[in-house]
Image (cartoon, rainbow, N blue to C red):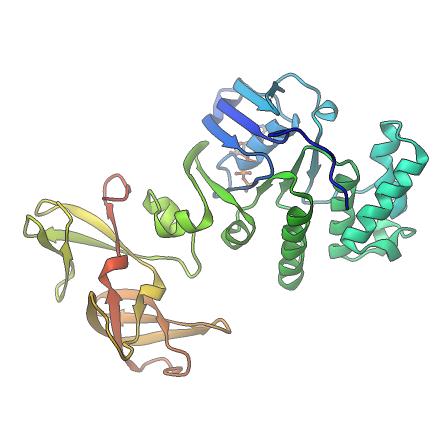
Length: 370
Ligand code: ATP
């Protein structure tokens, strides 16, 4: 497959202080973001955070209230959608029902007056990438959900745009197909290296697809980073709880003592020793514990761990991993179990908390404490 010859940074997108108001209601409230050429950027955030609106502004389907947007160094604020060299794949596929798959794929190119031979070769290429060659003469109504999704992607591929935009493209598919199509999209990006912005509220999709993730909240960027950065170094409780499955445990605590050797009281009987945090006595914090950092003791060295004992209340097996919701004093914490060691609820369970992997957030601001 030949890629279009491109100059450097052809697909780079820059958003500078982007705002969007619907009437008096601000939905996007000042977004600054640089998306690199060839990057796979995922926008995530809860419903209503403005991620679709931001994507639709990049597509040109919404006007920009203020701020500047550039593609390949060119200001695109006032450029018509069809002249932006951007292709969007929608959640509902938006296929023409009365046309065959082949006609659906050809439509955009015909509108652009591409030569018939060129149209044929691009359709053949897209059909091969997406393995839809056998479906070209069918109507959309004769396709499964996953096949329709692939045709929708095919329509974007044949255009060979500078940028692909995806707005929750997998949310109408069943769980198995979602995983399959997710891999397909990832493969497509590895093959074509076209700059991509992908909107989802599914953190697993975000983690598995993205080069970088932008977490949005109330129309503002909460954090931008690689999946690993967001997972290991969340700036805030919001990001910490949004990224990761099962979700991070969060427990409120209060600082006891002062100086370099403090402890955090989580419960009448549980005080976690903490070093190298400079917090004053009485400071209210939120302690974040990933389930995999609360585990059954294993043989061998465990340098900085804290022993806890509880009772498993619920046991959840996700195939490769087993998690248990454990009652530990008044706390309820999700722990990762050693496969095969425990399965039934109601059993006493010894756990070790890795103190080096704790996250400490300010209870008031939700910000990660250094
Ligand atoms: P979801 O995951 O639910 O799609 P989202 O993060 O994509 O959410 P947007 O669709 O960008 O959110 O919407 C952000 C906010 O803007 C919401 O409060 C929504 O109600 C509002 N909104 C979106 N489109 C319009 C519109 N055309 N007119 C008025 N308000 C709108």
